[in-house]
Image 1 (cartoon, rainbow, N blue to C red):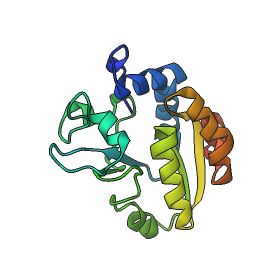
Image 2: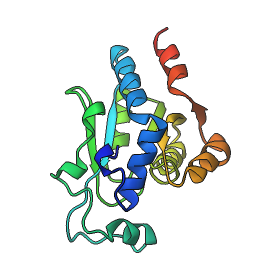
Image 3: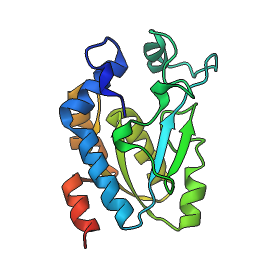
Amino acid sequence: MVHESKIGEKGLGAGLAEAVHRRGVLPRVAKLLAAARARGVPIFYINVENKPGFPRPRARIFDVASRRGPVLVEGTWGAETHAAVKPEPADFVMRRTCSMDGSHGSGLYAILAQLRREQLLVMGISTTLAVEGMVRASLNRGYEMFVVEDCCAGLPQEWHDWSIQNTLPLLATITRADDVEQVLAR
């Protein structure tokens, strides 16, 4: 999640931070994580951690993201998980450097196979890139997918809305944090 200290700055990170703040994503994610942990549900963090000088694929998104210099560099504050939703020792923390979705190159599917999991609940930013990419890749591998809409954010808001209303319902069950918490409480 993008840190709220970026709000008011220029650039993609600032816009995403504002969207996360405006939508109230962090408090909902924190509450949902606590409920999932209480039920013994495995928690996965798949964070972007860039390496300075590492070649990126030729795509406009990487050009736009790097205009203000290196971002989300491994070992720096910018690549850390926000303190409001920080991992706990039992959580799985995975890193990605070369993909738009968290499944590619992270080792996620090997761990899910060991845990014998068949359903994934996805939340995060950006809805139209990371979340959609994760849903598509996981669905291709046979996982039943759920997207927690109010625990996601993207830019612009219209793209998030389009994805949630049109694209993602074809691939996943769209749900909300309160509904997931009710299921976990049973």
